[in-house]
Image (cartoon, rainbow, N blue to C red; front, side):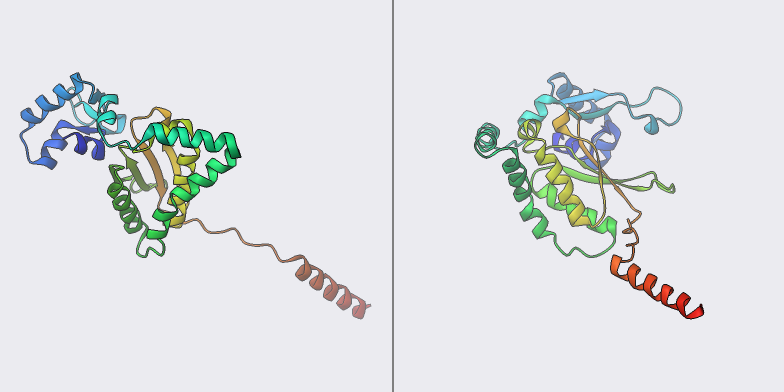
Length: 232
């Protein structure tokens, strides 16, 4: 159930019951128990999720104890190694390391075909296989801001990313390279948010029109001057 919350959170007890095929009361008992232990955190629903009358259902996300129990890698060893790298070779070396870390992911997804939502789903699956509890959902449907929201409910290197934000930036650039479009990072676990959230707009960005090369402009100016000279 904790993994389900990490993948879908913020999520209601009713939604978890639907996904897992369990009864609502049984799910709520488990969720309340995990919230009391700090494994989960109960919060008020998002404004856009409040519908109908009555008290809105609580939503659950992974709490601090829950993140500690999920796979986190060798945080202390990684922190020590990166601090040594930064001290010995400078911050640029950490940036290079961060880029290299995502090179394998980028290479494995190189040449993705299909629609943008299909490419996002392939990226989500690759991230989920690496322990990021990734998922995606459509947002702002039917509006000019329509897009997909890529969520990562768990980060195996969260504590390292807190100290070295170059990891988050390298990950964002990898997303752009894999998807072939710009993305916007809205929230990160490393900054204290409950989930890493990346917005992927469905409108494709077209490169700006390139101005004529200086040599072409000069050729046209010379031709124009020559024509004016003949008219005289």
